[in-house]
Amino acid sequence: MLDLHFWPTSNGKKIIILLEELGVPYRIKTVNIHRGDQFDPGFLKISPNGRMPAITDHEPMGGGAPLAIFESGAIMMYLAEKHGRFWPQEPHRKYEVAQWVMWQLANQGPKFGEQNQFKKAAEDPKNGDMAWATRRFDNEVHRIYGVLNLGLFAKRYLAAGEYTIADMICYSWTSSWKNRKIDIEEFPNVKRWLAELGERPAVKKAMAMGPEFHEDPASISPEEQARRKALLSHQRAQKVPAEWGKAAE
Image 1 (tube, rainbow, N blue to C red):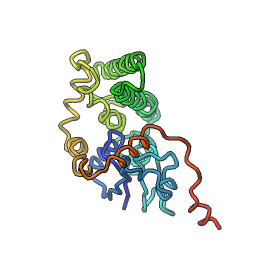
Image 2: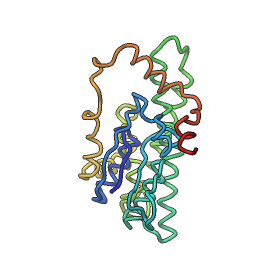
Image 3: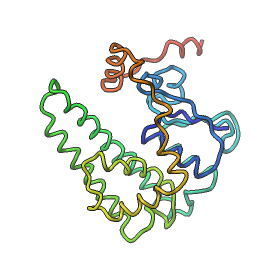
Image 4: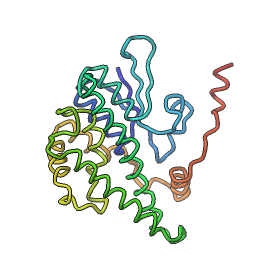
């Protein structure tokens, strides 16, 4: 059995897409990132970055003790390799896929995330003039849709001539174009790719997830709302949890 430490964000949904495409059993272990579950000492053992998704595979490839993996790209490469699907291993095709996986992790995810952060910051006048930052990341997001459009020119999928983890890892962020000041008609190859992938049952299931995890805002006190806002936006380094020292004694 495999445990998926999950919250219904774009990063979390990447893994759902792959697991559903593989048809392997998994259990969702909820990590409420608004409440701060990602800083629980037990979760930090699995993901010292304090981010989900992460997995714990209790029947790991090669046998042995349970295997914990954090970072969505590493998780997807591991699962695809373990099950022998969606990541061809012939070197030319393998690294064609790998480069798009790395591109998503280093470019699309971070830049889209920064666009989200500065967009939110601009809503509060106390944060000052956000015009340069919002313009910078709006332009970067536009550039990234252009990269995908180039990558999909005269191709059905991003890499290796087939549907792979490269497509899955990029889909969830790309599908948010309506909220990113993007005219999808500028990027016809991306539009066609989104439409095709969006009809896959695994993708539909992953992208529909969300409402069942969220709390009623009325049940959260103003004080708790303020704590959570600071928790997500102003994180600093985590100290080694006291529990870790006790366990090592």
